[in-house]
Image (cartoon, rainbow, N blue to C red; front, side):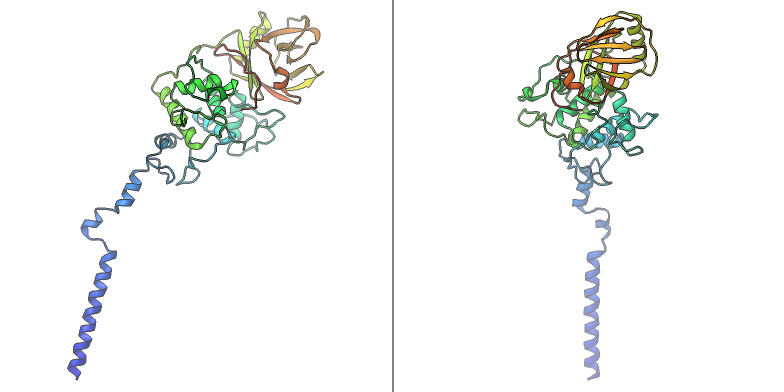
Length: 370
């Protein structure tokens, strides 16, 4: 009896030992399996050049996202996600371009009521506005959280690049839907491959909100063109000394400077970079603002008309949208002041003056775009 019990216990022990050994073998890899990680995980890691789990390796923007991340142009929304399908806001786009410009140190707080000093985007917005890259809407509003449309983003990058000329015809079937102020920018971006991957059935869809993945692709193509030493079809690289661009509320008008010492001094001032002046309405016929310095005066009796740019008392600049007669100095005149009063609006407005890099007609008012 004792022998049968002992035999039975030995059998049970042996069975349990074998079972435990078999279970352990499934958790502890053999020497061969240790050298060969799980195939699915290996492929996943190899196919994520950007390191973001929401950027598939076969996505048309995958290489662009990886490039922008590696070069510090665009970050992810988290450590593991890029959110390529999310809309890019105006504050985000300003920040991206600010980084591309090496994040220069700025003095003074932002000039917009909706921009919080010290926020992650405040310096970028100030830089973009002061350099005429992205203007506010007027009345002290930048629109930090407003989405950016495709044509707006292209036009902003075009302005960042110096508003280069482009004569090629648009290849998009919906080119007529592109706003007048964005036509040159869209032609330029398309001719340089910056809109590759964005057109479905040859349609650009200019009014659609642009996505983060699309912006990464645009910047990837733009930066690779400039890095390779190939100019992205830019012309008229030299600054003009007698033509200026005036940007406000999302519109840009070109103007010819007068032939006098006042206008020459103003052009010399603009050689230091774009100048932004806060202007207010006066007399229901002009917008006037402090220049911040004094220029030589060449006063004469003038009856103004829409588009005249006037120096008043040597230290104030005025843009006229209606008639007035007074003794002051003419600085210049807009090429085409069509829609000027509407574009200036009824309240205060920030006017950005810059020496022109290329000749062109005014971007007449449509909808506010940047």
